[in-house]
Length: 300
Image 1 (cartoon, rainbow, N blue to C red):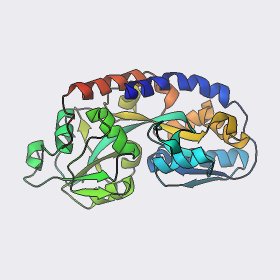
Image 2 (cartoon, rainbow, N blue to C red; image 1 turned 180 degrees about the vertical axis):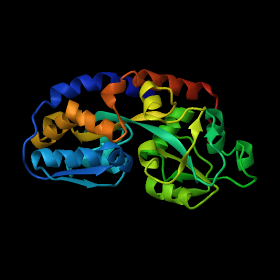
Image 3 (cartoon, helix red, strand yellow; image 1 turned 45 degrees about the horizontal axis):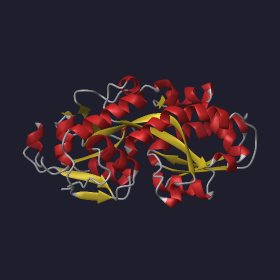
Image 4 (cartoon, rainbow, N blue to C red; image 1 turned 90 degrees about the vertical axis):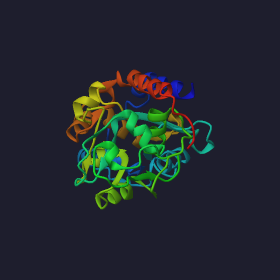
């Protein structure tokens, strides 16, 4: 129920956004953003450049991952965080974070371009991660062992969302060959390993020379993400401290990101703005139910 209530909350949060962030952009001090690398590649790099050109405010962009972005925004050590997962309210370091959904990203399964496999089913994806599929010939590929890559821990944006939407279990254990610290090393590992496979965000994967597999015969194209035909997607957030503590310079940038100008920049980057596909909130609930009803819950 916690997963469902968290997703339903997104339906209402966009309404609150427009009341909280309605200032106009002007020149001011530098604005420091840090967080999820996938969010950076999806829209933040382009938004930052456009905002600097428009206002003269220098937007400083650093990485660090979703968890760091959420927690550092909450404690005020940065102006804005970037996250590809929702906050975890029973974790003290995240309780003061305020998330603004800005765009949609898909979770995609990636392999080396020399790998002959082109698609995977949802059921096969489940079986892959719990160690029931171990050889590429089981997916229509070569007779070679599968080397599955995963992010370290269970709180990363990709790892947590994958467990939510594929297993309906945030604590699901995976059977893997390689554990890495972030999405960058995961993607680079598969770039150099014909037997490698892993999951990452489409906004990051499409910028590398990798093969993105179809999932249940659907490509993670812009249109398939926008209309919900592709199965696995999640919101991408900008993160601040609670609104009453949010500075004017942060409010101005958020206002820009949510404006028609900001959304046009996000679309040009190949990413779906959040408000362009609000129906995905309910579709995400349906995907959670599909994962829950699949019967694969055990820690293996």
